[in-house]
Length: 449
Image (cartoon, rainbow, N blue to C red; front, top):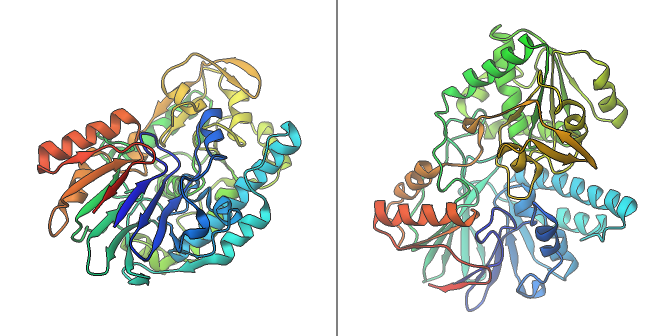
């Protein structure tokens, strides 16, 4: 078995790995590079392999940095099946349709070249083959199964085995502790090699028990200042987690009911998908559903689908809460709200997700006091508050803990999907704590098992 790395090497974007045996070639994920003009340009480059020779694609979850180049794969004559869990197939379809629409809008507005067209997205959706957790699938002389990663709804890590040969595990993205709605990350079976994400490979999150109390504090403080709380939220999972927490806070009168807006058509669609798959809920969420409690139904929440409805939010006087995409603030409706509210000290921007280098979110997170948004130069006067406990990614201790769940520790670990310092820190910690050799691959590196 040979594994080659064609994305998410020393960066947190563009996940794509090619696995080859004597008879079979598959890709694990095929994500889009995101974050800056430089990374966007990488999407147009060759994959590093010929898509027409690939037998299948295996998708860990529906985030754009893991599925965003699947239509390009189709465009370049890939003819195999695309395997994913049932929720991931539906979520990825919405994510890809949204990405193509953004490309179309940018083409009309700025004549930016399109990576692919709607017909390529439709070709992807036609190739999705649903596979539930723990079901074994055989492709040539390779077999694999999905295991629950606990990262976003329907997310999985992949355990793979060559017939009569070595075993490999691919973490995809692993989830944080005690995330509402999601079941815990499953333990790892035996693997000769593990490829593990390292988004927060050099970080320790705040205790998850602080998640709700810190959110309550931010809401109450903003209301007292008669301000507006802006929450840039990823449409997949983070928004739903936030709605779950807001539902609890308002229902138990831990915060006053306040005008709130979910200003993300994609998040509204994803929420409907998640409602259709209660069998994937954790025990607590399933119990709530079975007793008729809709944990996405937040008192005072208005969903805004059209641009006109989005603009109408400005007519609602503060205090108010606006949840909008995109999560890294590099596009979407959140930018229009930032233009309006960043310059007022009564307002708050709550950061609840990873902010990649080169994004507007990263600049605000890093404390920049002047930023450009939609062509306007804005003095940042609003409070910028991050809550790490909301992260959908495992921190360093959780990543180490996942490796330790294996029946037998892997013989070698490769750290991907992390900026260079984070990946290197995790590799060092793995070697120190587990006495396993760990490396940080570069783009196009290959390993032979």
